[in-house]
Length: 180
Ligand code: 5GP
Image (cartoon, rainbow, N blue to C red; front, side, top):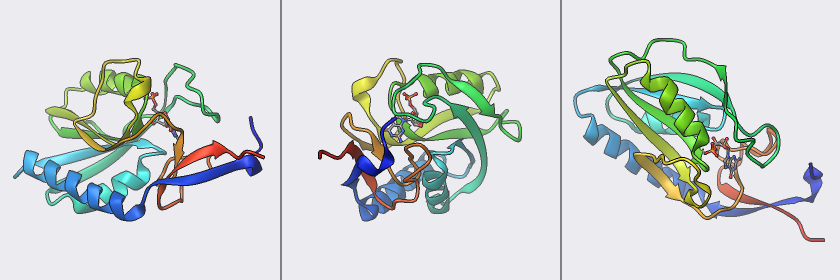
């Protein structure tokens, strides 16, 4: 792995644009589920900040839970394998579930999670992804609510990490190796 000191970040999506888009997605969800309760399932750890902002903008009865999977390890390349690290705390049977993801890349994680969650008989199952990187898709999956479609770059910030760093950046940034 490269030394963290040789990495540079470049802003891709500013905090204000994220805030505006999160409000729009929340309004769309509120329209789609008018008069009903929605149960947000956040995929740890990357989606925790997106979920926290999103749930506060949804003008409906809501509840939240979290699930954790391992797909990338500490580096930037997908292992192509997904493993359940933490299961949900409670049943989702009969609920309007919205799976909240930080980023949709190859689609392997999402397709695994949809398989797992569908078996538990939710009333409805939708997906909200802050970011969509369609260039690398290996599974035929898509999100119902997408914050931003982005180019094929490795991004960090607003919950997304590189080896557990950068999650606290307020903007979504491209992470590149600095040229010397
Ligand atoms: P997928 O299974 O769709 O390839 O990837 C989903 C997971 O890979 C995301 O939830 C995220 O943890 C990680 N991932 C994919 N692309 C990026 C990226 O550009 N930046 C970061 N930080 N993580 C990514």
